[in-house]
Length: 241
Image 1 (tube, rainbow, N blue to C red):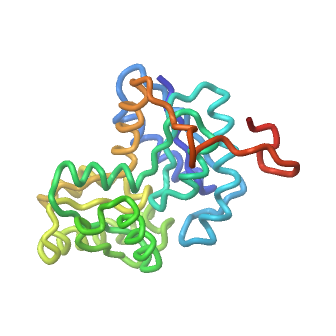
Image 2 (image 1 turned 90 degrees about the vertical axis):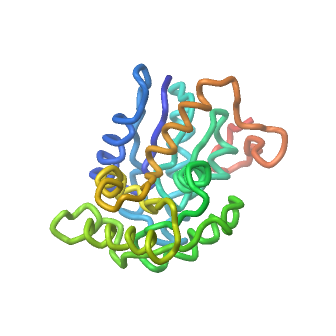
């Protein structure tokens, strides 16, 4: 089984971290096909960054389809380009936010999200509503650090994330906390142990769900909204069927 995990930003160190988590949770025999979107923003922090990342992301999805990917994971919590990727791909495409929130609603009755910058809060709130989980998402908390600062061990990111996790437990009535940034993935188990509340990482949830769907005969429906793009002169995929 081959699971394509694509980091939509251009930061290779974040891709490497995502790859470590993905390979740790993947089942024996699963190949993690890891990719970074060259030419994308170095981090995705808002709608403009998302938009700039999508053309390269779609090209990476298409290339992985040719390599024989059984499923795709878009490794950014904003789920950039998710619907477009599902048009381009026949294999299932999983977004971190959708997968993590689905796991949270199975494993708990109420959850909160801990993310990076305040500007991400409305984006994640809207995604929760879109996925039908707005009522069960108690709050989206931001630690007010840029995405790339999460990788800096000396910058205090872990302490800020832990404090927000405890606040979600004590103040929000959350029964689980979802980490709202792919760069937080390696902190998941440590935070669960330190705070005593279930902490869910989107990379783990998405890779596990991708494996489950890849093990079935299910493919992305092409009957309507996710039909392959129509070929157009000058289009991103002019040869698309």
